[in-house]
Length: 139
Image (cartoon, rainbow, N blue to C red):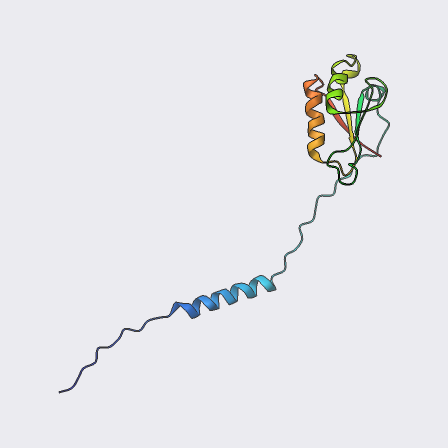
């Protein structure tokens, strides 16, 4: 009597196929080069002297923070003599400024000033009733 063996069905092992796919993926990632996306070229107009109405506006200048500090010094002019002010004093000076100078606020911030401080100054100006805020380059 012969023993008949049961035939096993052939199976396909997935582990080697997954290894090959990962190796192909790594090879493609390493060998692919990405072309840099060029930026937009913008032609800015040359700086001109501001009109008299802007020169008479309130000017708030924020200096770069000192090393180890998070906020820069705020200098304010146009609503009295130029002086170093804190945020509370700046609000009072803006509120008590003559109506002619409250029509516009020019904000000048140096390069290393954090955006949070600029936004706080803008919020103070809005609360004081100044809606027209312009930006200038601090030199």
